[in-house]
Length: 503
Picture 1 (tube, rainbow, N blue to C red):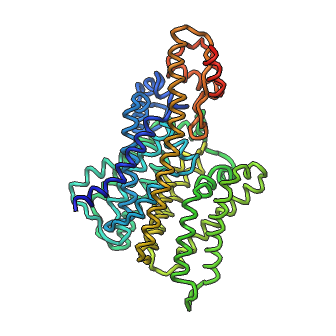
Picture 2: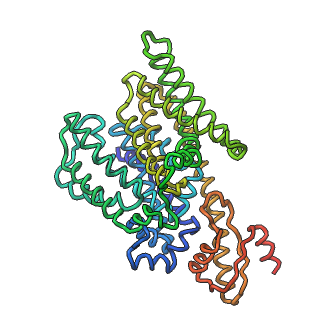
């Protein structure tokens, strides 16, 4: 029995070590140079007045950009806990290894744009990942509601849950709005379904309201609304056209099309459920609509897979991008219809809750710009929950031990390969960055007025790993304590090595 308990811990230890290693190796990039220099301290001194209301995220990034080992530990703890909670939310009492292994795989092999901006970039990580953990904690604590049961928390949980609600709202604006809404929806749902309302539900909602007030009282948001902010904008005219443009330019691919593995798993689950409950069955209502919905789900998943092998498709024509956006909208409607029309032998409440959560988290992105891939990390995690719930529902009808053993081996192989792949890539970037830092120190001692520095390798996995404009060049110099008069030139690492060896 003890050996079994230890075995259950092993996957999470591996996940912890993997993300801990990555957290230590990630180079500091882009905004990290500002937060890790005197600019971050200046923002702290006026407590981020006129900057933003992401108070906990800002405090965390100031810490993590100064201590690499603390960054490694924080990333490892948060991402491991997210993995743990995903598994526990889906599997309340059962211990299906397959669900856990697929969850780990999906946590590792997320779309590259999201990985680049929400995981590999410290400034992105601190604002977009911790609030997801806090939201998942509330999902776990309140998980009974979707089974139409009351929450089993005693009154002593009311204060911790109040603090949880406040903290959830001090990282990212669209997560803040979402936290308040699910607090309200949870109470309404409990009332409508005649579920006894737990005190923690009330204190959580109070906490989210307090947290949202703390966030949005920052004067930066008044400037955004008035149009005075230099970076963030709210459209005053042509709101509908701006929203449509944003959907086709940024939202549909980051929210749907890029999630190829998730789309394929959803398609496989839908096919399984079709053959289990619909195919060759009599008296099936709306059978043609189910065929159309299933066809759309499968076609979209295959198209997503093919598009990964031809990434330049999008640049070929605006018409193709428009067609992809329209196809994505049809896909989402088809997915909703398919779940509605399936027999009530799957966890529809939970599936609709996850899809509704994705919609609620996305709606604010139509209002404020800019919208970047990191904004979609919370939605990606909920897509994982949706996919795993579908898989869990399918697995209830599969009793073959050989099936699970086969899937487990495939999942383990995929996890090991993915981990090895990412560690190799990020270690290569760390190696180049380390050489650059050592070279900078050497050139500072020599009082060089021109520094020729290497660009990092595998740039596509990092957010602007070297300065791309004058502002970031100044921040880079401040972060590495380089005199402002020194000229910086960045060249490819291979060319830089040739120059260094020739000296």
